[in-house]
Image 1 (cartoon, rainbow, N blue to C red):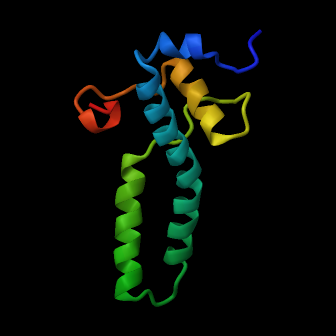
Image 2 (cartoon, rainbow, N blue to C red):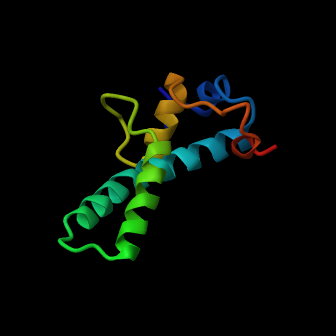
Amino acid sequence: MSLMYPSVDELLEKVDSRYKLIALASKRAKELEELPRLKEELLKLKREEKPTDRDKKMMQDISAKLDTMVGPTLDSYKSVKPIGRALEEINQGNVRIDPVNKDESGD
């Protein structure tokens, strides 16, 4: 067994370059880390008795962002850190670079 799970060699079978792998994993890890915080922030704003216009705008912005995000794709993870979890999702084929969105592939 390698020291890192999943191994870089396994991951490079899913993503064709180290650069793209790093970009994809970091973006996914950030999303995994940000998702619970955004949900909590949205709930907090919704609990306000008299939300201000600014609060309403923030709720709309957070809701729109949450609509574009995907929660965890595995039932359980070996890693406790977001970057490790992102790599596990990539290894399982649950997270891929969108060929239409050049921004994610680094091209």
